[in-house]
Image 1: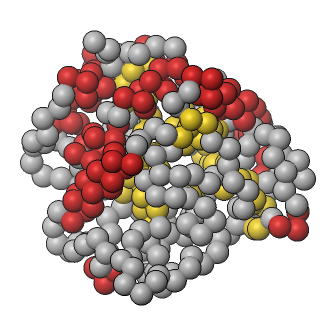
Image 2: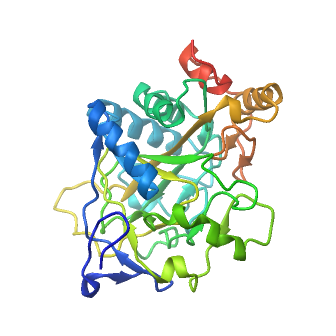
Image 3: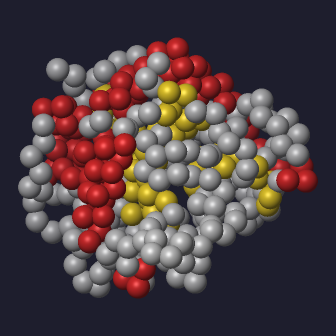
Length: 341
């Protein structure tokens, strides 16, 4: 079966996800290095044509290690009832956030030291500047995602519904490109992001199921977009930036096969650790000054926001108490303000 992005899969090798959609979970994804202007251009062309892309070499090995360490420090610093410790599975019996998808938006993660370190990696803004043709960009202040190895743990992810993240009624054109920074390898043992390639080109077909004025909607499993092709599980490496058009039908999933057992003495780790990141132009904001004031307030009080930087939506049910003591650099502060100096 040929897919819209030119990939091919043998129907006999396809797996079914939890709602019965055919999935190619084996094919390794094409990756485009940001270190070469020609490959970056090709990668962004892939985004335009197929609704998703994987940009590699965005974080180097040292930055990856530091980002993971900062995320663990944040999780280990949470107060009771949490007692999460890296490498100690017996402490992983309760996690903040949404367990079905593994998304953590609570307790100030969106304005944590970890997330600010990651989103201020210069290559990330450079890539979004190429997408939007401006450097006056607002950064999202959103959260992270994780998955654990123990299949019997109730906090093991079960996957999210197929959906899009903008309205075909109010926002028919491309106004948001979402992203995640991968900090661990992603393949069919770990699960991760799944997309329906080129479904952004069929966005108008979702008008028939859009009944509410909102930015996201579950796609029913019987819809032609899900039934006429197949989904792709994105394979990625640490340091990769996965990008997808918000009109692209997508979801996340746990692994399709059981990962190999740990070797003797091997320290257990997470299956997935990703950072959500999105940047959009300040020019998209309806009321820029009001938006900036609210974003500064969100930083001050350690609120997590959505992947819509030019709109203001807070996320997460449990907030952190107290003011933010992070000292932002000028570069980081400009990501709140949407300026480039």
